[in-house]
Length: 303
Image (cartoon, one colour):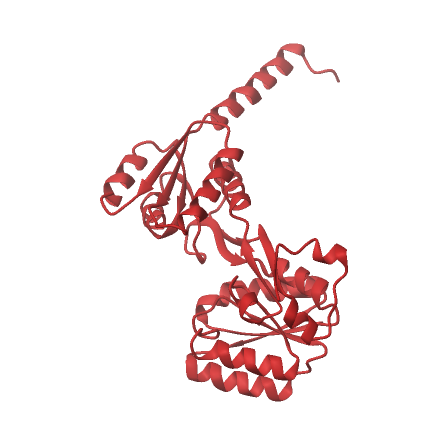
């Protein structure tokens, strides 16, 4: 059966009109005023946003003089405005407007809490892919976590199964409990096939008490450590990841446009746009040498 030319033309006109209405939606980017060098993070994110978004865009810097309630009121008055909210102050505005505007949050280690956004917590899938590349003998990962990291650990267990990695997750209640569980872990771990993941968790990976001891034991026992915190590669873990802020900006635009177009349920996803940092001194200590094709995938190395 042939489609009527009139019906077909009307259908095309409807698609074009709908597309123009969506593409024309203005975008407001909220970002905090911070001192150098941290301001460069937001500059990179904004460059990514500007590269991806083709329509009208307004940059709104949030400083001490900014009235966040008043700004939220202004944004709610025009529900057609899409919003990308960066940093803590941006998140505070997002909490006030998410029921009226299409808004996504970024540049924070956010957890699912009714808002849409991209967390600075690295997607476990990316971590496990890097682990298989850098320590291919490992097929088991231990991780200790507190309640704040539970949502990410659930994702990690599923993604580990998909990549042939068994994720053994143990919840800790406080610092004392974390110390006890790490002591038990060291007694039973098989360093040849098992790694330890250090999530971005304030309890299980306490920087002052827990981390120094973990690094010491791992070095003595030749245990593979990998971390979600960028600075940890420099301190001695085999590898860690850090955000590709330009690509994060692009992904935030894609997310807010999809949210605005389809009104999908708000969700927070882990960060997939990352770069790899590897401690080559630690790798050599573990007896690992990497071919040029592997080294080309590493953004930063420490020796």
